[in-house]
Image 1 (cartoon, rainbow, N blue to C red):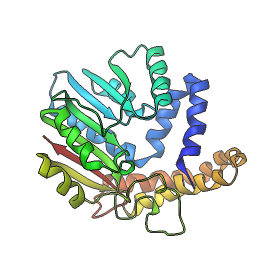
Image 2: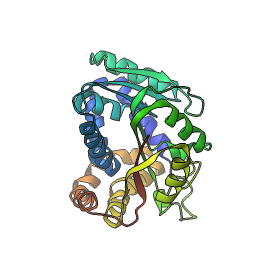
Image 3: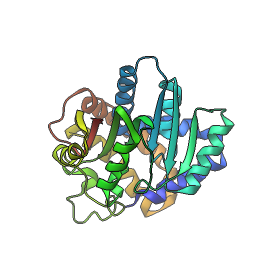
Length: 269
């Protein structure tokens, strides 16, 4: 059960039909609970800067989902969005150019090798760090890249069951990962020695969020990985299951989780 083949299907579709990209962004915002948490924190962080223009580093932009959100909802700003996958960056460049979004620039970068210095007010890293072996090196690079008083927002699976890490029979959601995930203590112990201070941290995908993820994401992906022909039946599946998924996601988002399958962590330089 793998994410990447499904990602490639959507990437190829929105590349062929750019008009669908904004609808795709909205779909991701609705279906993935992590986006609920990330967008809330981004808006809260924007308020801390007042009215000044801020510089943002989207470290691992993927499809450009959060860069698009920030370009619209966190103005005034300048965004530098990077990813290690060149084809995704070229695709994003073409789309953002077609929408006349000049505040976002794109680049191909390896986060373990970047050398920015006191350049950004905010670094955003969503579901990236679990894929990188030398995470401390990346955290060092992030610290150097931030201006004094800047913020680092990390969203990642946690060690408490993220992507079913404890199910030995489930080979795949973590086959693309360098580690199971992080706990609050893991991130604190790696970031504080570098000079970061914990600003805020929340566990996500608790009891209700985990159930919503299984119903809304895991089971459909399992079905599609059996055969792409099952994409045809997904609309019927969601017709019956989505109302329950949405209710469970809201219960997770509006409550407090002692632990959860994900973690949303903010540190300050």
